[in-house]
Amino acid sequence: MKFDKLETEGANPRTKNLDELSTYEMLRIMNEEDATVPLSVRDVLEEVASAVEHCVNSIESGGRIVYAGAGTSGRLGVLDAAEVVPTFGVSKDLFVTLMAGGQEALANPVEHVEDSIEQGELDAIKVGISRKDAVIGISASGRTPYVEGILKYARKQGAKTIVICNVGKPYLAEFADVTIAVRTGPEVVTGSTRLKAG
Image (cartoon, rainbow, N blue to C red; front, side):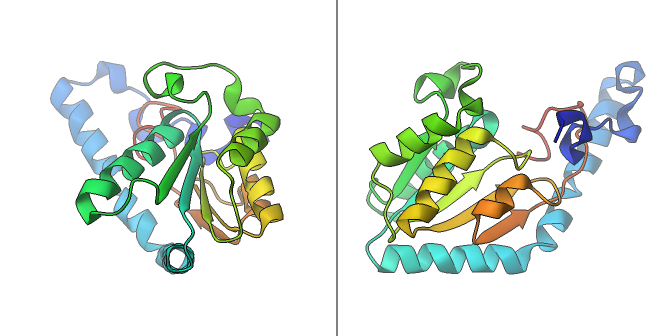
């Protein structure tokens, strides 16, 4: 699928003339668009509940939660994993993060690594994904090849697989036990999926 056909990448009709608005009007529209996100989440609460149950089962069986993503999606997984430790007092080993481009990509864009299925598989092998783990692939587009490589490997190992995305009918659903498709629509700034999708 081409990016320009993805729901998250289209032009938002409410923000066609964003550059002509006052600062306050820009912010008002952005705030109104942000307010649609919780309603989109409400539509997938059953899928969220299934994903949570898989994660709880993994933890209870001695497994881990593995986040996998690229770009903003990967960074959000890293952020959540870091915050879980002090919030809940759990071991830092309980949540594992796989980010296309590794540590370097947290602060700096690393081009093209998200396009490698093979690198995703290699990273999954390095952290030793097993049948006890729950693997959460995060991909706004629902099609990131790096995440695909991780999910495919995880399924071969018998791990539970979950996809979080922002489009209907994501390609990665093929490799997931649970798909959470939070359809947030086009962004205020076209293609900037760190906004509503994030």
